[in-house]
Amino acid sequence: MMLAPIALSLVFTAMTSQGTDSLRDAISSRIAATPGAVVGLSFEDLQAGDRIDINADTVFHAASTMKIPVMIEVLRRAEQGAFSLDQEVLLVNRFSSIVDGSPYPMIKADDEDTALYALVGTRVSIRNLLRRMITRSSNFATNELISLVGAPNVTATARAIGATHTQVLRGVEDQKAFDAGLINTTTAGDLARMLLAIENGTVLSPALSAEMKEILLAQEVNDKIPAGLPPGTPVAHKTGEITAVSHDAAVVYPPGRKPYILVVMTRGIRDPAQSTALIADISRMIYAHVTGAH
Image (cartoon, rainbow, N blue to C red):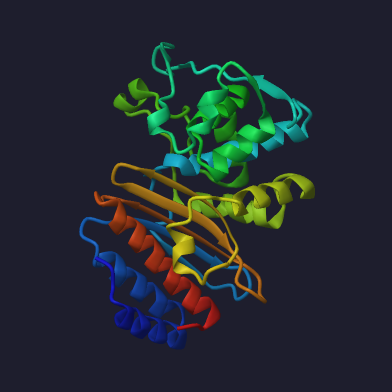
């Protein structure tokens, strides 16, 4: 259920006048208005220092937000000299299940980025795959990159950053692993820690940190956190969505001030339109609080 504009306006007025306690209450009320919703949220204002965590350590199916730690690990390995980002890899649409090693292909119809399938049998740069994985949420590119760096290494690097609940076991569309309950997991708090490390440039070199932010800023799926912001507001973010699961993890850059981090993870909402509206509404509330706009 999406709150009417007048109701949202009244909520914003209360939030900006009473601080983070009122904001937390308003967000909780908005969550409660969506039947079945389970929400994990982490918000940190890097200018004012305001912070709100709601179920921030609750573990969720990561969906495509797991592509954030994959990106970090790929760039970490490049920084160490394991390969160049301009190095090309041969695209072969054949991957191995972590359950028994049996092969499976990626399905074009199930992928946000279908263009990569036309390049099977050719060589594509790691940089190209990295960008497609984030900006177009390419599952094919993700599996190629996980094959390159190894899922255990992705998990280890995430945990070294402080994302202690994050676990990347496998690539995408490994149905046997899914059926066995072997899924990639993370929390709102973990995603916020990874984004903070990227924003502060504390994970990799300044140049590679800037490249990560540039890639996240080029995200093409913008119907969640960005939808709750004034048009044109820069947002470095990554979404994730599967059946009854919908997430967005973002660094938001309001004009004339330091950014803030907002991660919203949801499950239990069968209608994607409802989960998308919920995340956008929470984003709108946070922006109103941070900027005083209502």
